[in-house]
Length: 454
Image (tube, rainbow, N blue to C red):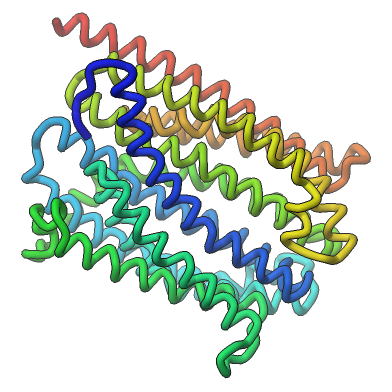
């Protein structure tokens, strides 16, 4: 990151930060994307099992990853304030915290996996795939969290291309491992959907080792000497990080878990409906990586300018990112509308799944418009370290507006399963409106505060 003088320079720097993050996020989600596609080719039951497993795994893993994202604004503001000497200590404490959180997730998962799956009315094969998919991917919890912590540090320094390279190396490996473990190649048994979890876990270890090696040996990261001296765990530092990270993680959790909740509610429908729902959500989530990447780039850019007390520059970055997000949402919606047949065919050749997937995809078009506005604003607010209000807004919009309205539409209209998707759309738009109102209020408040100080 460096100071810019005009809008043209800001847009150029923003794109320099954004594009590698985008490639990284798409590559990272590509693992889930290919898990779903390749599991679908193994059969509708495997696709439905991976759907249920992913619905449990994704919100939990994203919650922890969101907590660790606290490191990005912390380090970005340290760099803006020229406090680089504090960075090694903070990063090491983040690593300690990621290890503790990983152990906690493993213990909870061991206790809860059977009771949670037994609550759902699933076919025996679907339940079997879901259970062992979760067990398999759970073996990669620790490396996944450590990798994401180090990635936040790397990105906060503005070297987003480095994170991009890690994923560009890892993603093809994941696809090959999927092919081997799902379909049974090179003497390995055909595990079906369970093999997707095995492949992802192995890939997480590769990502972690690559990131550790880069941080330890490549400039400019090695100049911070992150691993030169091991510092003792500091509960105080963990608490400070959690104050920022828990609201971030909880906001992401409430957003991602709403889709998981819908998947659970859809478990009363046929295996074909669950499979089609997962296929449509999977593709919509792939497109969501674009506004999410804009959000992450804005956190870095806004955090840097706020740390240097250049509030007008931070505001310019904010509206630049929101504008880019809105444009991308229109493009994403057009892709879904024009290529619905091709997208549906990616996931299954079964007629029932194909037709249902296309219908779900039409609802997903509206997801893109809401996410194109809401996700960038969340990134802006994180750059300001304004995370608590975002958490509450997410809770209200997704769980108090979106899910209840979806349940009403599904149970009291002829929309059936599609009613839940309509409820999601309502919740997403409500969240976008509330987030924009919060950002507008905060920017005016900070401007007044700075004027009073002068």
